Image 1 (cartoon, rainbow, N blue to C red):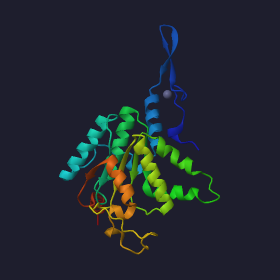
Image 2: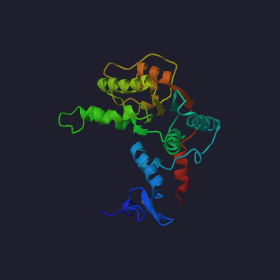
Image 3: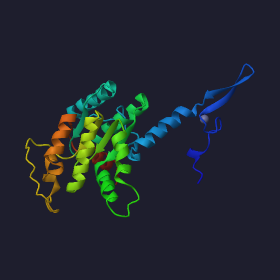
Image 4: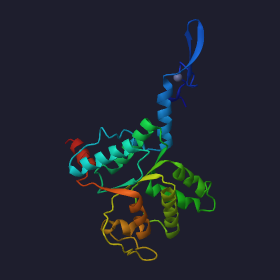
Length: 255
Ligand SMILES: [Zn+2]
């Protein structure tokens, strides 16, 4: 179990304080490893998935006007925090960089302003909440929800990617509404297009699977009530373009 990254710091033994000799006296000084470890700990606590950990505003690729606008808004959000009083809803197809920008905001807030942030995938959150309803679950709903309630800035990635059951939908609304009432900021990303329809066309037990989900709008996936709450608490940032991740990946395959 010896991970070189986890071995003790030779200068401070991981206390964060190094003893130095100055003018014949021994003094404790902040060790050079302290800042890096603190930053790593904050990143761990924010639960940013490994594949997104290198996402920054600086390495975000601008391919069109919508990207330029989105990047500008992301930069403004970081600059304004904590005066910033609305969250963001990044809307657009797969691979246009919505999650990249959402993560870049978290990372810069962590690094520059020490803000307590959390990244959550919508599907994982729903699954985790649903799992707590099983009788032998070792974790309670409040174990799952506490960090989601407490963080100052939350990223909820892939909104609508999974249809919650009616009672889980109630919990999701409760989470979002609680954050809204506490004036805590939430950044959403979603692949589902938004339409001007305010009608919730879902059947009471939801459409049977087999329907092409690509025809769904955001309202179809999360309902009118949650969608309208999210619109009250977020600026909508629409991003367009082809799937740049796919293009980059295909270009890297050589035959
Ligand atoms: Zn050290």
